[in-house]
Length: 234
Ligand code: SF4
Image 1: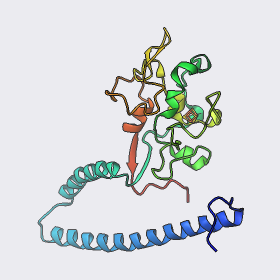
Image 2: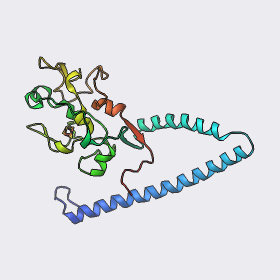
Image 3: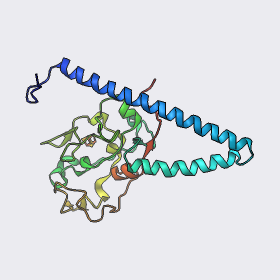
Image 4: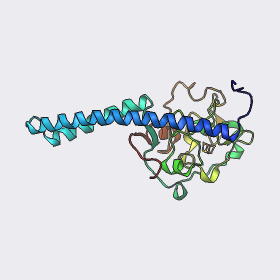
């Protein structure tokens, strides 16, 4: 019998779906591991032959590898391959630079714009398992169709995981972010901040931002593609 998509699924159905998904991932991983092993064996054999024949030195090889590796990592990031993590891993519970802003008195103006910006989680966030991440783009913070972080409580626009929030949430300083405030002190928000397509609607997406942990900086600089990174401790 065909499943009715409107009938809520029970825990056993959900478990079966998850198991099917995991089995698929395992089979893809196993196939990829086989292909990778084959390619690596060929490459190692080629390097050994070139080295034995005196055509390359290991130092030359290492230098060329570093250059090519950086180039490929950039391409992989553009294509969404690999995982995205905060590059500078910091203990969020010991993070010293939390910014103090009276959000409650301004949220009707800024519409909690900061909670619509993408950023990557840290390994600590992922391992802790509380902050949700984007299944399609691991490990960016999970956001809904409206681009708001899934942890925001619509209405009061407060964070439901405040004590566990990631470092970029603790460190972000909206006061000098021209995409959000024309003038923070005078309480003049950017005219487009309430638009549903903010911030992509902004002509100058690269408006000056102040803090190294700014969430866009977190998206563009503080994260890096981590290939082969262990996220779940073994
Ligand atoms: S975790 Fe909390 S503070 Fe961070 S983006 Fe989500 S709702 Fe905002």
